Amino acid sequence: MDGSIDNRSVGVVAPQVARFAEPVRLRCGAVIDEYELVFETYGTLNADRSNAILVCHALNASHHAAGQYADDPHNVGWWDNIIGPGKPVDTNRYFVIGVNNLGGCHGSTGPKSVNPRTGRPWGAQFPVVTVEDWVATQARLADHLGIRRFAAVMGGSLGAMQALAWTVMFPERVRHALVIACAPNLSAQNIAFNEVARQAIITDPDFHGGDYYEHGVTPKRGLRVARMVGHITYLSDDEMANKFGRQLKQGRPTYSFDTDFEIESYLRHQGNKFAEYFDANTYLRITKVLDYFDPALDHGGNLARALAPAQARFLVVSFTTDWRFSPDRSREIVTALLHNRHHVTYAEIDAPHGHDAFLLDDARYHRLVAAYLERVAGGIVA
Image (tube, rainbow, N blue to C red; front, top):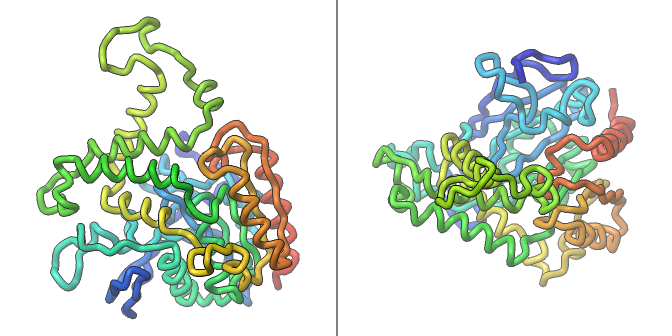
């Protein structure tokens, strides 16, 4: 990225802040008296406010879904390849909203924020949140913006879990849900990966029980390892082999514990970069958000019963090489929706990239999203 703006970009954007004085009670029982949500918008809201799309972010993303900042042109939105004029999520038609969720570290109220009750950062005292808590606060943001019903709610991975939750928590407020690279809950293996990542952070000597802000340090070593573990799960074996194989940086072994292989260098680079900007307390909480998501839990494990209240039409997308949230898991969602006679379009994209495929350029995937949202646009009052 050279800082130039192409004609299919939303261009220069700026975050906004919504402040909420009404307390929010979380699923864990804790109450946050007041909070802020940082968000961005792209496109124009139409006269009857019927063309809004909510984009929900995954684990390490934020409100910055598209465009770039005037003072940081290299900071391009995480879903910029799909959101913009003439792109699959066409901002010539739609008013798109990206929000940094409660507990985040990109401006919304979270562990780094000052707790008004103590005058100090929340730190370890910030409660564990859930997908349902996020959706409840997103609904308040929609109220703040005067949006009673979304044309669509969409996301990939953890973002897709939020889209799914929207359809049962606020069924009358969602016309369409785009549920991409999702699972109805985490497998034991996925929970295990998250626990390894959390333990890397918690056992870092600089963690200080979560109150490292007061010590002027951050648990970067733990964050680095956590991110490395995550990256291994985001890529398929084939993609990792194609990108790195067994390539040696020096062309031969050094017989040391430095980065001999290109894949080692890549993982360390990603870990170092992540540890510079992401908050460890937020990472702990967001991995727990993933672990706890299970809409069927309160329905005796019956996913069909859990999804029965939905009124939305659905696009469910999976990717063949996504072993973290495999196509089988998406088909569980589709089966439960069809059991309730909900309208569902399902696509399984043959893509080599693994779980990260939902973020990447794939012409078939992008055409699918564009075609579906073309149909959605047909139901919008101009």
